[in-house]
Image 1 (cartoon, helix red, strand yellow):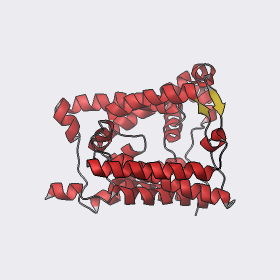
Image 2 (cartoon, helix red, strand yellow):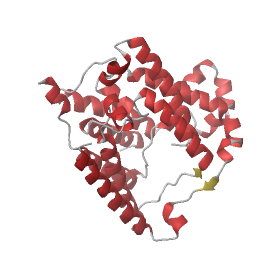
Image 3 (cartoon, rainbow over the protein chains, first blue to last red):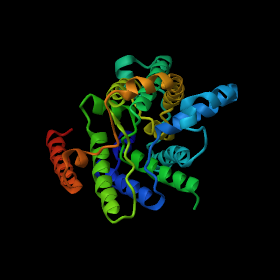
Length: 133
Length: 175
């Protein structure tokens, strides 16, 4: 039964089309094109500033992308809450440390998954910023 | 409503739809990269098609302005390849991993920390990259209709038709 609930999402075309409309309305009402990765830069700047404010103030990239709380930061936080609401109201919320497909190939070890996810995240964000995505 | 409230509300609806579309999970993301489950491609490409029509419609009506990013082949191609390698290991996108955390898949925490570190590393290397990779093949803010010298609606119709043919093929193959 839990598996059935797990798979009962919306039609991906419908959910995708509604998301498309959301993006259009966002541009219409607020002039904002959605994005996420700049927030990681601003947040990294925020965190680094705690340790070395002078260095962050000197760094060219943080001058370009000022560490601040902006529209996009709240957008990113909103994604978390939106998913939390959708999953807890449809019994598809699961506390899970290792994804099933990962476990099938690499085993249930949490540390292995954590290290790979951390390294993958670092590499992915470096690439995303280089591509300006 | 203030700008920040708009951001939060847009994010909540976005995260809600991502979760409902079942496009957030590791198994779905890696399933797409392994060409076994096209759920996220269906979702993403439908989003792109709808947004493309809507945004150009509003632009033609003079309501909005486009926000075109520069095409820099060096950054786009090398950055894209690096992003893909990281994505394939992590199995979450920058945005979707916040959603993954929202539906309890807390290995996303490691991805989020990794991405903060990756952003910091990029900032360190930015001065060097700016004068090297990010100068290779810099075409500025160009669009496909501009390059082809045709009306943008021709390009939009072609994209929509190709998208629908792709979707029909996915459904026929049961992907």
